[in-house]
Image 1 (cartoon, rainbow, N blue to C red):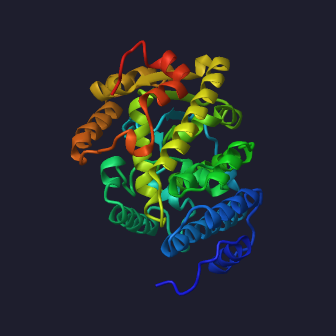
Image 2 (image 1 turned 30 degrees about the horizontal axis):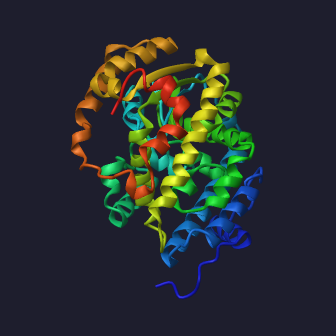
Amino acid sequence: MLESPVGLDEASVIDEARRKVGLSDFGDECFRVPMRMLLASLDTEAALTPIGRFVQRQRIVDILVNRLRAEDHFRRHPEILEETITKPLVIVGLPRTGTTMLHRTLAADPRMYSVLWYECRNPSPFPATSCGGCDPRIAEAESQVAAMIEGSPELAAIHPLDARAPDEEILLLEHSFCSTTPEAAANVPSYGKWLDAQDQTSAYVYLRKLLQFLQWQKKQAGSRAERWVLKTPHHLGFMDVLFKVFPDACVVQTHRDPLETIPSLASMIHAVWILAADRVDPRDVGRQWSDKMATALTRCMRVREQHPDRFIDVWYMDAVKDPIGEVRRIYEFIGFPLPALAENAMRDFVARNPREKRPPHHYTLAQFGLTEPGIARDFAEYRRRFILDRGRTG
C-alpha cells in the first residue's frame, strides 16, 4: 500500500531521476514545458488510483533517466550523432488498419532496422551492459508486458504485445513528452489539447537523435541493415514535421473504414486507461479519440496534396489476403529489391503469426458513445477519397 499521495510535480521527478543515475545534464531541456503540462493534467484530470499515480510518475522518471543516460552517451561517444538515417520507410494509418502486422512483416527483412519494444521503453542501455550480450532491458520489458496483460487481460486480444518485437517509435517521441502515448495511458484532455497546438519539430529532432543512438547500438552488436522501417499512427497529424526532419522518408499509408477502426481503437484505449484510473467513462474515450483521429487524417490529406509522390496506399483486406504481394508493391515503390532471402523471412513471419492465434476482440459503437452517422460525418472526406469507392475493407 502507498501510505501518502504520490507527487506529480516537476521538481521532485527531476530530482529523483538525477539521484537515480548520478547524472545531471539533460542536454536540450525543451521537454520541460510539455512535461509540466502533462504532470498537471495527470494530477488534476486523470482520476488516477494510488497505484496509477505511482506508475505514471515512475514512467516519467524513467523517461528522464533515459534522457540523462542518452546525453551521457552522446558526450562520451560523439560518433553516435554522425550516424545517418537514410530513406526511412514510414507506415502510417489509423490504428487497427493492420499497421502492426505490416510493420513486423517488413521488419523481418534483415536489411531493415526496426525499433524493438524493449528499445522503445529504454533506448539507453543500462549501466555495465555489453553490446551483444544478454540485454537486461529485455527482462524488464517482458515484466512490463506481463503486468499490463494481467491488469487488463483484453489487451491480449487487441494488440500483440511482445517485448522483443518491433513496435512504435511513438514511445521514443514520448521522451520529449510530445506524443499521444500519455493520452493513450490516461484521461489527460487539457494536455492533449495543448500539445496538439504546439510545434512538434523539437520532438522529431530528438526522435532522429534516438534513432541514431539505437542504430549505433545495433551496429555495435553486429547488425548492418540499410534503412529503417518505422510505424506509428501519431505521424498522421504531423506529416509536415516528419518530412522536415526526415526529408527523404517514404510513406506507406494503410486504409480501413473508420466505422470499423474507431470503435476498435476506443476499446484498446479503454483497456489501457482502466489500468491506472478510478473512473473511466467509455464515452470520454470514444469522443476524444474519434476527434483526434479525424483531425490527424485531415492534416495528413493536406500534406499528401503537397507531396503525392511520397505516399503509397495499402488497404487492410489486400494486406490480409496477400501480404507478400503488398510488400512487393511497396518495395517497387521505394526502389528496393526483394531478394529470396528477405521474402522467405517475411513469409515465415506471416506463417508463424496468424491473427487467429489471438483471442477475439469484442466491442460495439454504442458502448463508447459512437454512432455510424457521427463517424460518417466526421470522416466524410477521408471515406470519400479512400474507402467508399472500394467498399468496406474490414
